[in-house]
Length: 453
Image (cartoon, rainbow, N blue to C red; front, side, top):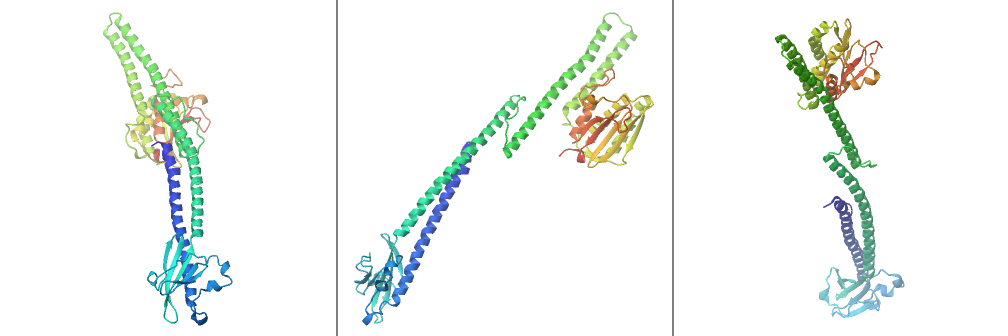
């Protein structure tokens, strides 16, 4: 069953059937109440008549309504008749009433008996006269008004059911048409995504309901997929470009070496240069693999002290810093707890420190600040080098972006830093030092509890 058919069934047909059922129950209750009211009125009239049926002159039986001057205005009064013990009708009111000619004592009892025949509600009850004779009092009430009221109810109920059903059908058809159109647009967009078309966006939707939220979520996911695809394509293109240079260098070195006979010393020099290029290729491949994995194969997050992790990274970099005449300084809080993947976070800190050492002039210091900022943990690395131009502060975190092409490295270190920050619900960015001095400050922030979710 299609979505539109289900909406019509649930939103129009079933409510209409429920309304019809409720009106049918109401009809039965209405009819029962009308009949009950007639029965009560007939019992009351019978009780009144029975008290004084034989109080006429010489005990002659009579009906009070027959003698009442208000009998004509008693429109709701029941017809009446009195029968003797032979079943013969002795008196009747009104004269043209529909009371039967003969009612035997066996057809009545001392308790009123009620029944319906031919549009007439009848009451029969046996009574005794003062002389001990048995009589039958008969009352009859015309059910014409009763049936007219039921007919009017049925007519009104039918009109209500038809109008409500039409309104529900109209509303549900409009709702189903609009909802189906909105969902069909999303389904078509998802088919295009499955076919690899990431350029288009889902159709616009002004709805503020769940479908509108779904559309916005799909649009956001599409944008992220498109950005990821573009980033992957850029990464592949940049990687191909970066790998081409060392491969070309290796090929040239090998070709030059093979052109003529070489001494053992020359061969050793050529092989050492080739090994350096191989090491560069291996480092680039390792960084590419880590960056491309997006942390899917990384270790579990666990509680740790960011200060202790920074101390380990500084200790490991002391030798390189000493060779370059740079002092490494750790500042900030004594203890900064967070929840993170230890090896990934350590790699990011190593990359930040290595980047700062690469640009720090001899005799300067690289300062590592570790601190808390509300629920987040922050690590800042400051050098006193040439700094980063404002226009390049975001670009330095892109793969293979280098401020100085003459410097060694894969060009992926800061890209890995940003990837680690993102995976931990944080961010990585560059800014000018707070003291407006020379150099740059790179910041690694970890989200609350060190990870998203």
